[in-house]
Image (cartoon, rainbow over all chains, first blue to last red; front, side, top):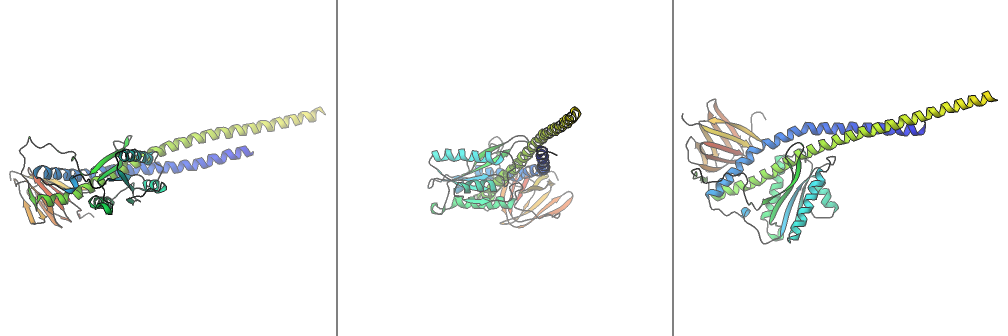
Length: 297
Length: 88
């Protein structure tokens, strides 16, 4: 076998084994995405209940909570960036990071200082490589986040929001994550979590006879207990959405990779075939011309 | 029993139980709170304890580690920080 042919065969073999890996990753992502979506749905009732309760407190009492009021003593803004731990998910992490940069630019123009918090190895690596200081980092479970991590993240951010300026207090908290709209469409989104402005998904009070709530032990204590939970559940929801998006992106990226690998294999097979044919033709013409030369003498 | 209570018990990652019941007892921070139909709207913080639900199918107990309960229009929502279920 000629040298050219051997090179082509080698390429085909290596591409074939890559294709197997891509296919396996695609199947893994596909099998886990259903679970991730279920978790997004399962977390719905909890956050819905909390949101309703908070709006009940907000509409039935005049409590001024530090979490709902603007802080003016510092211009630091915490930005929680939720990305994947691993690559192989197309532009998933890159899109989130690009959105983050855009947000950072916007905030910087308004005279704010951005403190990034990284969730997922990609985000952490991105900021570390650029020598930007991270307020906090969490890695290791971007595609199947647990509520405990959400709690940890929430506690840390909550602490930062309530901390005095000297201890790194922040005046605002934003999250950049990928919203999972459907299997084929996920887009990066920015939400402002703190200070709490509008509580989403609340029925407008008014038309129904307003129930007069009794708060135990008191409205303020109830709000104190509810708000941290609200933050936890929002962060948890974002993480779950991001996980589902990550898996969908990975599935799509791997699907493309498999078909690219197939293209390459086809191409190299053609090249290998024509190389083999060229070799045979050459050998035949050598034999024929050799025989001719012998016959002529 | 004219009025039944609609009960939803939810944990951060799943709905633990939902259905109708005649009586619910929850461990509020100020002592056990018993909720029957047409109770006045209440929003209360829960401490660790057991939520007891009396329904047509019998009495069920859900140990919770904390959370809160909201009652309004004969709908009870118990939001638990975590629930220890029998299956676990």
